[in-house]
Structure formats: C-alpha cells, structure tokens
Image (cartoon, rainbow, N blue to C red; front, side):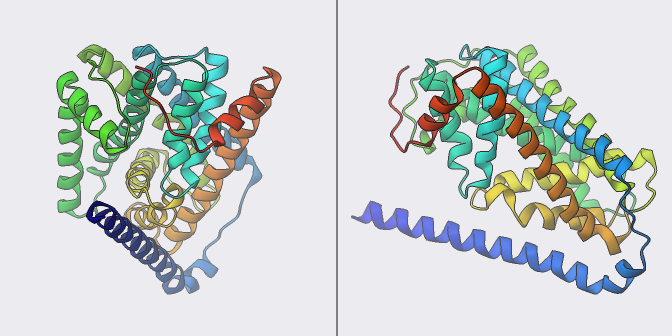
Length: 330
C-alpha cells in the first residue's frame, strides 16, 4: 500500500510539474506576442510560396536522416529490420510523441519490433539509446552554434558547453553507456537481461555523426522558412538550428507534455530573440512548430501507404495499439 501511495504521489508531482511548465511556457510565448503586437503588425511579413516548399522538403529530410540513424542503431544491436520496413515503421511510431508520457513513442516501437520477431532486450536498448542520441545531438548542435551568438548570456553558453561535454563523456564511452542503458531500461519496467552492449567507441562516433548530420537539412529548412518573415543572413542558419536543437532537447525531456508542446516553443522563443528580431520570435517559433508537424504528418502518411503496400501495415498498427505487457524474450 505504501509503495502504491508513493507512486501516486510521484505521479501527481510529475503531472503538476508538467502543467506548471507548460503553463509558464505558453504564458511566456503569449506575453512575447502581446508585448510586441504593435511591432508585429508593422513588420513586413509575406509568406512566399517559393520558400515553403524547400523548407518543408528540408525538414522532411531531417526526419528521414533520423530514421536512418535508428536503422543503423538497430543493426548495431542486431535487432534491425529491412530498410523498407524499418523507416516507415519509425515514422509511424514517431507520432507517439504526441501522446502525453510518450508511451507509444517508446513502448509502441518496442512492441512493433518484437511482434516482427526481434528480441526484446536489444530492441529496448536501441530504443532508449535512440532517445538519448536525439537529446545528445540537439545539445551538441546547440552548444556548437550558440556559443557564437553575441547577445546570449555567458552562463547559458557555459551551461550548454558543460552539458555537451558531459553527455559526450557518457555517449562515447561504451561502458558508461551500457550502465546507463541498463538503469534506464529497469526504470521503465523492462526486465532486460544482463547483456553487454555490442558497441565500440568507433561505432558510437559513427552513430553520433549520423544524428548530427540530420541538423544540416534542418538548418537549411529553418533558413528557407525564415525568409517568409524577414531577410536573415545564410550564416545565421546554424544559429537557428542551434536554437531549435536546444528547444527539441527540452521538449524531449518534458515527457509529460505531448511532443514538448509549449515547452519547446517557450525555449525556442527565448533563444530566437538573440538571433532574429524579438518582435517576431514567438510568431516564428509557433509557425516552425506547425511546419515541422506538417512535415512529420506528410512523412507518416507516406510511410503508412508504403506499409499498406507491403500488406503489413494493418497488422502492425493493431499490435502496437494493444495494451499488453511486454514479456522478456532475451
């Protein structure tokens, strides 16, 4: 009884913290919009269709490279599926981030893969490490680009560099990485066998480069999209990617919110004011969320069509949606 009560208390604290965090983020974005409303009305915003297409394509390419990172990760853990199956499945389960707690994003992907014959242990390790690589790549991009932003507070720059350095020590050390993976798996209730992670230092370097490379098209996409609002030098595109990278990392860590809703926009808006005109920072942050969501849905729609063409989609979606416990198959 005491254990159940403690779990309820912890769960209530998490929910309360998430609600406060989202409320503060939305309040901040709203305040930025209201305080700069007069300047926004006078700002020459003109959405030129010629820039929307390239921006959407680059953002879609960002997600595709992330799916290739997942493909490489699963093959490293010897639980990979053919590319024509794994990439569509990645896009479909990636939408699970929009469910509070991101249950389908993690558990759903594990269930989908194990239903196709992969072993539970390696699949769980790969799924956890995929989430960590998302955060790691975002922090590294943020630290590597935002340290050059003139007006950004010094303490923020030190914090970003420290986080990137600390994560690098963990992510590029197979032994530390293995230890954290086991702890993370146990914390999620996965009874994972005590096996050694089959990765080496060169493997982790290669995986890191794949996830980092996904920010190249994202930087281009943000640059093209920014031209709909105002002329921003191409040299500032890396700063835009760094701002969004930090925002994405914050959104992933805010597990209670669906896809980091509110938290991502709040962080992105705050960082953007040091890169672009503050009067359109909130508008650009919200519009970027819409654009990236459209890119995700577009890719997920194509993925579902491809899965149906393989005559596997219906069975996979049914199995992923079932609320059944995952048995240890290691």
